[in-house]
Amino acid sequence: MTYEDIKNNNAIREYIKQADESLVALGFTEHSFAHVGKVSSTVEYILTTLGYTEHDVDLAKIAAYMHDIGNLVNRVDHSQSGAIMSFRILDNMGMPAEDIATVVTAIGNHDEGTGVPVNPIAAALILADKSDVRRTRVRNADISTFDIHDRVNYSVVSSELEIENDRKAIVLRIEIDTKYSSVMEYFEIFLNRMVLCRKAAERLGMVFHLNINGQRLL
Image (cartoon, rainbow, N blue to C red; front, side):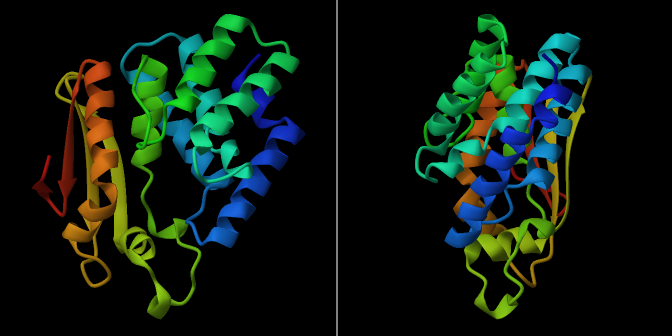
């Protein structure tokens, strides 16, 4: 079973669509196909650069594509809900148990509230998910009513995750327009995510650095 099989599965696409619709109602940023596609591309970049097998890369991309379907159940504990949903879906599709275990573990550990980078696939998913900060994820068209999450995401002019120094460091570079949000506000909502990224980088044998507006902060 491949990433393309998962990506083209109509049921999985419907779960992603409706999970995102639930988040629209709750006022969250975009968690639909743009997000999961970006996360899938990023896990591919991370693991390919670090020399992991094509099979590991494909499993990571599957986990990335399905990681947020638990929002269909509830935003609270969505990583665990998504892991259970993914287990049932992949088992019914005939994926081998060893591969299901890898994907489900990664999905169940991607959230900063309870997640732990227990294996390289989970670590790559954490880094890819938490680094997807961008203006286009904001769906509120009225700047005057932005909450802190809207302001921080909207302020991000560019973001790039890059592996450097002969695969010893992974650096998240962000450019923030401080007209919309301060660097302090970024840390206010994303500090726990950056700490989890540091742990994920360590699981992959690297250190994690955060660079905002040309200044290294972590």
